[in-house]
Amino acid sequence: MGMNRLLHYFQNLRFKQKLFSSYLVVCIIPLIVLGAFSYYQASRFLLQQAEQNLDESIGGLAEGLDFRTRQFEAVINSVTQNIVFKQIFVHHNGNITGLYRDYVDPFFSNILDFNPDLLQISVFTDNPDILRGNYILPLELIHGMQWSRSLKQDGTQWMGYNGKVFATRLFADNDRGTNTASSAVLFLSLDEDSLFQGLREIQADAYHVSIRDGEGRTVTSRSAAMPEDFQPPAVLAADGPASGYLTVGQTEYLYLRKEIPGAGWELLYCTPKDAIAVDARSIVGATALIIAVCLLILVFLIRMFSNTFVNRITKLNTTMMLVENGNLKVEVSSPSRDEIGQLTNRFGRMLNNINTLIEEVYQSKITQKEAELKALQTQINPHFLYNTLSIINWKALQADAMEISEITTNVSKFYRTVLNKGRNIIRVRHELENARAYMQIQLVMHSHSFDFLCEVEEQVLEFDTINLIFQPILENALEHGIDRIRKGERRGRIAMHGFLEGDRVTFTIEDNGPGMDAETAREVLIASSKGYGLKNVNDRLQLRFGAAYGLSLQSLPGQGTKVTVTFPRYIEGVSLPEEG
Image (cartoon, rainbow, N blue to C red; front, side, top):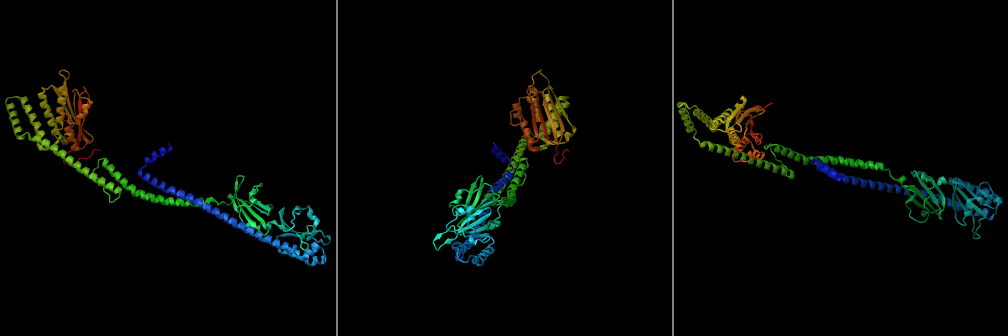
């Protein structure tokens, strides 16, 4: 239903709105798709760039740790493989006091001075004769320490505890080819903060970083803004991808793994994906701005192009409305050669053809009616008729036959106004004289068996009209009205009224005859019905004065017939002011 309503609304839009909307939709869809794709690609690229930068930073941290551990391994080797130190701590021979004073103390002090990351360097030995300060401690102290249980027979043992990292190494007795765990142990304590000082350069709000040894044990770790119970899945302890994403709980994390070969460690860095995700607001804002600018340009271009199309269609539509309202004299043409121009020019040629046909038909009708009237007029020799009627009138007066004289006079008036000197336009006064003369003759012929009433406003008499419009109507009222009243039923009556009605002259001719049904009344004015002369009068009036004028007929069976005649206030050759 919603789609149908939308289609119905679209169909009822004006053509300009349809064209504009269509252009806009066609342009907006690619823009939105392109904008979404650009946003996706930009976000993806920036995320990859952030991952790459983080990978490089973690790689730099791992390289720094590798460098530091190699330094510490060099220090450890320089102590545990030193012949003098072996003499002191493993073989327990020589001038211990002198060797310590001249060799051990300065050596250890220099190591601490040149390696500020070292918090402590000590040797645990079982020889009580050589215990000196913090550098040489009794071996029995290590029995209560956790790291003592995991001492290696060879190589360095690394571990972390309480914010510190420890390194231990047994002094080896290479002469005997065996390791003596109870002889001496080198112990180094490192500042954990110094190991992770590279983290300061990695701007991340939340992370977890840990250092693991070759067996997967955590040497040390550090976290910031991470869940307290966060632990990387065990699968990362085995060999696997150097980077990727993992899900812990409901959060997705990026992990990076880097080897620290100098100590046999692995650096594991985890951070929430949201922590490295690029702030989309800047991308969305830039994308929206680009789309908005493109839309503004498109709206301007669409408006310009649609106006180019629609303005000519609107102009053609306005011209068609003028033609529809009756103005057939408008000029219609277009210099354009496209479809709209062709349509305009074809309409113009069609309008010219219609005007030509109208002129031809109109002139043909007028010529035909004039020819018919002239043919009727030429059937009578006016001079012979007038002379004959004058002699009859003179003889009637000599014989004192006044009724014959009256009839002769009325016949003379009737034909004089009918002929009207061969002209079609006649003064209303004279046309009315024709009607009265005709009715006087009919009264005599009907032995004054009906009444005739004629009331006309004086100002109506000075206007012009076409001749022979009243006589056919009066003849029709007599033949189809008065003559069909049953004898003794009622006295016949014909009433004629003339008056001004705005900018038109109106005459009504009404009889009290039997009337006619609606079908007959409708056909009288539109068909050449036998016995009725009203269509001819109506056609002549409309041909002369236009379709707004002519005859109208009202009739009901048993109630008589009323014919209304209308024509404009017209004086031939004179332009009359319009009624205010």
